[in-house]
Image 1 (tube, rainbow, N blue to C red):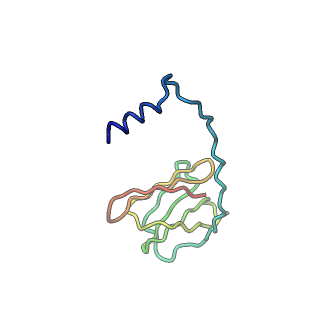
Image 2: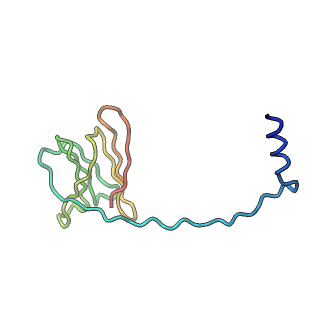
Length: 117
């Protein structure tokens, strides 16, 4: 049975060895989905803090695990609620169109990274 399948495969193959040209198609760009942004301050004392390199934004986490992104530190913008598990370390970086947030988990020492608008 194997010999028959191999013979059929060889008989159907191209002798020229040329690979047929397949035109590359670009995938359409992904549409941005609107996200409901929730604002609010902390309800318990802040226990973790990370600041952006330029010092213009901060990420904080309170004793109950609530996390907030402070996009401006001059009081002109309200803090944004960030859904993030309780962490033992936080990092924040400003990107051209938002922020990159990294956290090291309390129990498993697994880091997670997410983008925030």
